[in-house]
Length: 110
Image (cartoon, rainbow, N blue to C red; front, side):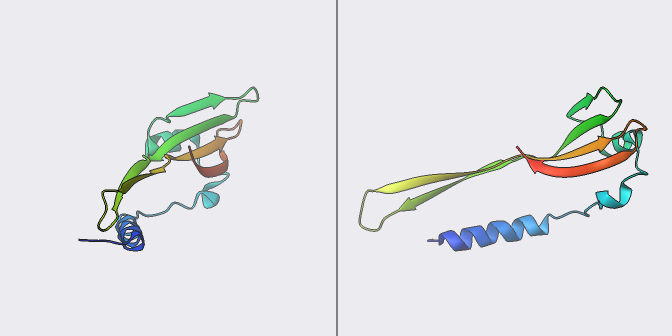
């Protein structure tokens, strides 16, 4: 069976779309959401640091990155290629002010 690159990508996107979960609106929680509530809801952060002013910066792994390998063979030839596409891990960073209330949120990849 010969799938084109576009078809494989489309199937992958459809699978990822089907696995979508409820999104949290972090901006609506600014000023009210506490660090303790974050630990109860998200668990212990993967990384955290307390700054000199008492603010806490914490990061949670949201999803593990993956790699996808694709093999291409050329008709009537022994030549083929193998491509690997890497997807990074996704993280959520929450910053809590000195009063332990949420002041900023961001999502990033690493």
